[in-house]
Picture 1: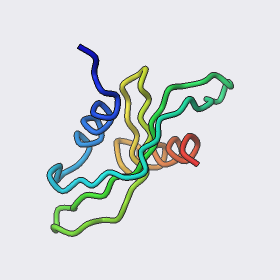
Picture 2: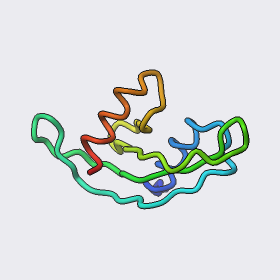
Picture 3: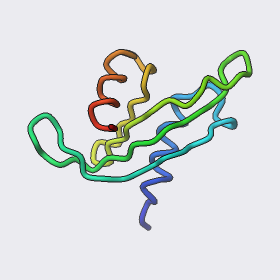
Picture 4: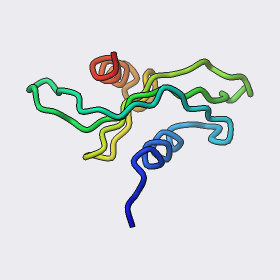
Amino acid sequence: MTVDPMAQVKDAVLRTLRDTQSAVFADMTRADRLNARGEPMDTVCGTVNAKNSDGNYNGPKKFVFFIGDNQVYVSGEGQDPELDTILVNSFCK
């Protein structure tokens, strides 16, 4: 059975959100993008908008998902929000 990469991406992003039911995905594109060493990496870039703890939508946040590593980085989120934002902006122009 083959796993749909876009479903894999959505699952990974949903795990970073407080309100998974409210998530709205947009602009998801899969492409080989070059890393710092110039090597291609299979990635998906996109945006997600979800409700915060107050029940309001925050506005879309950009994300990058690395298919080979099954790793997602959401701009302004995670253990190191600043680093996640740098990673997202480096891969998702």
